[in-house]
Image 1 (cartoon, each protein chain N blue to C red):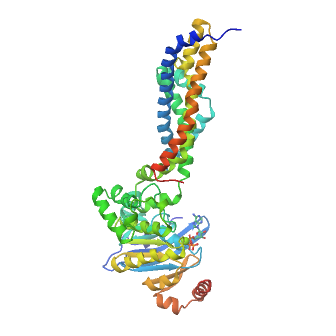
Image 2 (cartoon, rainbow over the protein chains, first blue to last red):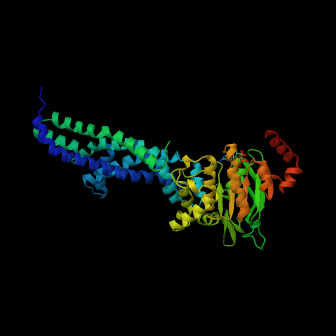
Image 3 (cartoon, each protein chain N blue to C red):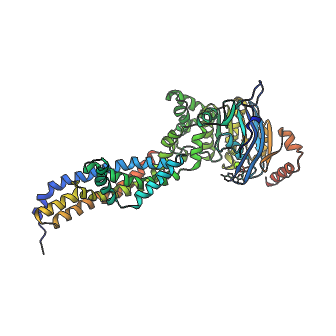
Length: 223
Length: 272
Ligand SMILES: Nc1ncnc2c1ncn2[C@@H]1O[C@H](COP(=O)(O)OP(=O)(O)OP(=O)(O)O)[C@@H](O)[C@H]1O
Ligand SMILES: [Mg+2]
């Protein structure tokens, strides 16, 4: 039996603070990309251009049916063979952004479909162009029902950031593994990683809930 | 199905063309023909009411004019210009979206279920079109909207969201929202059907005032025969996708000629 060493925890703390920052950066950056890509995916799927609609739908389906880890490897290792050389960070953010973008597009789709046909028609009756109809009428109403799903994927992306360690992004998981290799101590580093993830994930659900209520109130759409 | 477009004029000439013309307009959903070769003219400033049994195609007429539905054949003209089509090399071809948008700007519509934008206040609903479509300065859009809210008796509720308004109030805001675009043609599709009986007059009074004070061309679908009789210049009785009978309200309601018209009016009378 090995014993838990508090001294080690204090000693490692600064490195984990740093790594937590990187994890949050990876999750935040990846999520930012995913939020925008998801919107592009879903709107592209709703254009009257058949080819675009079909390609987008199949692409989203492909991304959703294959593992994230494979996609990370694909962008990082296969990219260079086609002359696309990316840093681990860039490759990781692209992979995770596209992956979660595909999932978010489905969340958005649900939100958009919850907006009644009458809203589109009222927008048309005042001659609002399609882009403005999305921006001014449909998306604001699609947002509140999408927030819970968006929140789940925010937590999901956060918990998937350790996958970026396999291509050398120095986030929490990578840091713990490195420490393990240096010191042959695994208990404390991995426990600390778990504790940090737990501490950050748990309040998220609460804040997402609060945020959703706030958005509904701000938009005047109290249920 | 390709039809011979040469039978339709590129535009209506002369100086007494109607504000709206449906010429041999057919609308089908799959094999269900909803409107069959409809011919209907509405003059400038005329108030035409459409009555008829459920499923006879009344709503579809308005929706086609508002371009919420495409048509299968025929041509709709607005102020002499084709709406559903446009001229290309001396022939009529299906209209592109820029053309549709230009002609559609002459038309406004109010819906049975109001369809106000729930995330905007009453004033916001009215300003949306003027600001986002007509590109008016906010101040001017606000003045115009407030004036209209005043006219429909909703100025005090300007800052309320639709969820805080009664059905009658929402419908009045919806009328103001449509008018804020300064349309020449207004379409009303059963605007009182979703309302409690005691607030129906709030809305019909607004429409009365419109008829009295504005030179709008109006097409209205309604189940309120009394209102139709009082306010219309002409009443069209629809049956099974075409106009079975039309005429002045006095004639259509008091001395209908067609058997189906009589049956319909009797049935409605009994129901009330
Ligand atoms: N989107 C659609 N798809 C298929 N059929 C439709 C569609 N919209 C309308 N219809 C059919 O077209 C016919 C005419 O419908 P419309 O709504 O114009 O009738 P209406 O005269 O307004 O009836 P109501 O008094 O019930 O409102 C009906 O048989 C209806 O079922
Ligand atoms: Mg109807």
